Length: 286
Image (tube, rainbow, N blue to C red; front, top):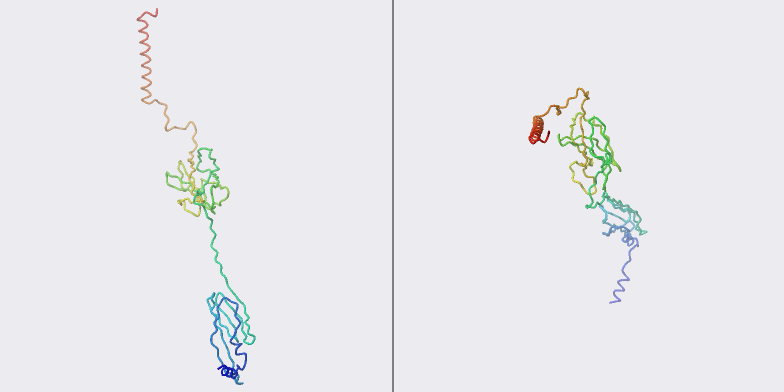
């Protein structure tokens, strides 16, 4: 049996050229895609020799396209990851370049705030806390100054209002005021004559311009400040003293005052007469 197989092996013809074998074998490409060799085709040339062409197909595992390579052509890829190059069956080597497109998504950074922190507030500087009650004449310039406290998130701008509860009216002092370490605003009260003032108490309101005046306070964020109150009065025209009349004043006595005065005088007369009769009756006075 061994002699039989050895004779068959010796008589088996070798391929006419090693190019057929080299064409079927390709060097592995250094890429992330997997390569699968498919089929070979033999063709009879005019010179009587057999020629073989092999093709290799690869699916890009990280891209959205496909890669096709042949021993006599070029390989290209479409998608986010691509390999391009050429393969030669004689040299048995593959040359190419890898191009990759990488997209990085960056999310906006947010500042973590401890929910146990208090909401930001305002501390009045002008007028001071110990200045007492403040009264301003309508038509004058009024200046307010303040500091910010407990701010973890600084607002870009604030709005300042004055509110009167008697007529349920709001007067705009300033809007979109830039925020710094300290804040101040000067109010021209004469510019609001279209909205008549009352001689009443007003409330200063300072809040974040990006929020509503009724917003709920949040930890570290500026809350609505409405703790400072002041009075405003409408001035009256000048009246000379000799022409001044007090509507609530009167020089005459009231009925009760006249009755009280008559009672005191009567008791005085009765006391004097009684004492004189008592002394004269006893003969104390000679």
